[in-house]
View 1 (spheres, helix red, strand yellow):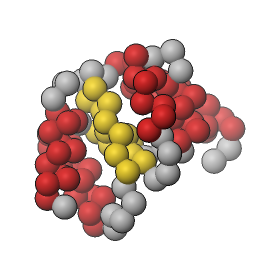
View 2: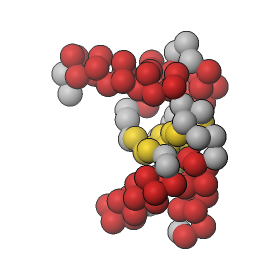
View 3: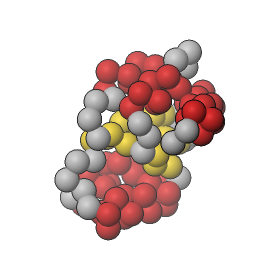
View 4: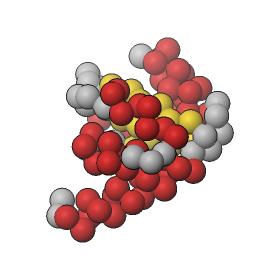
Length: 100
């Protein structure tokens, strides 16, 4: 990923973090591709979105947002689920965890 693409990703993530009602951080180690696709589908069905981004870029994007308190959670293989609806991302993540 070149510098311009990284800058674009940080800008997009920053916009997402400023506009969303809730952000959920989950560690996805141990999930295979099929399980990750199922998680994405469940989250989309619940009204949330899932993004896997480099932790460093996510930390930069979180600066100056209300969601900046999640920075310490960004260690290891993490995914970020977000939604404008304060319940959707949490419900989707919980449903996926229960199914697993």
